[in-house]
Image 1 (cartoon, rainbow, N blue to C red):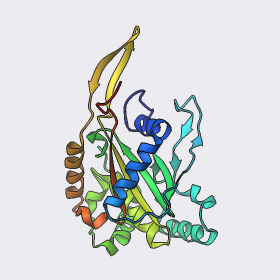
Image 2: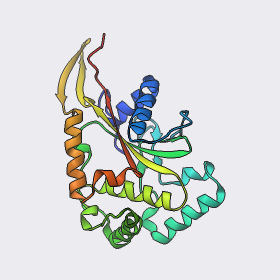
Image 3: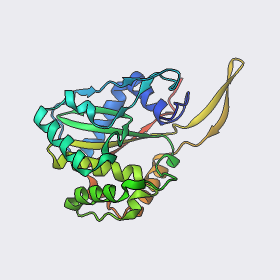
Length: 248
């Protein structure tokens, strides 16, 4: 787990909006979903709590939700058994495969949140898979095929995180759980400042605006050979300005 930056970054901004701007966050999410013609009858959010961690290892003392074991207490026993059996058959790589920035339930759908505060958070520098490369590609191909999406070895490369997120959403939906990945992009959310004396001093700004995020998303989709419209059942994108101009 990466350490949270103070005053900047995706983890800080997500925690900030969940705690201090909850209504704005939830209203923005609902607006984004409804804009894509998604009907939402029950607008009550149920956010899942994190687990605790060793404060000597993680500055917040918290641990991201990992894997899917937390579903055991949230869904029907037979459905949970079906999901876990399916993952076990796919391979050992599925154990604690993903760390989720947040998870919430809205209108009987589980939303798995990924937060981004600058465009360099979208790509990954490493080639993934290791000894499980073949198993992972088989998992991705099997679950993306119903959506007419072809998977190749690029899915283990630059945009591996997005690839494995949407593959997992496809798997969950195929096995009976209504699930969707929700990417939250915090515009102007990566401005580093430092307290010197009693004043805040500017250090650097790697934040992005919606246009820059959109360009980065399009690069991601092109690299994976995916059309954005094809993914409407699996992923949604939300934009929030972390530094609005109407401040006091």
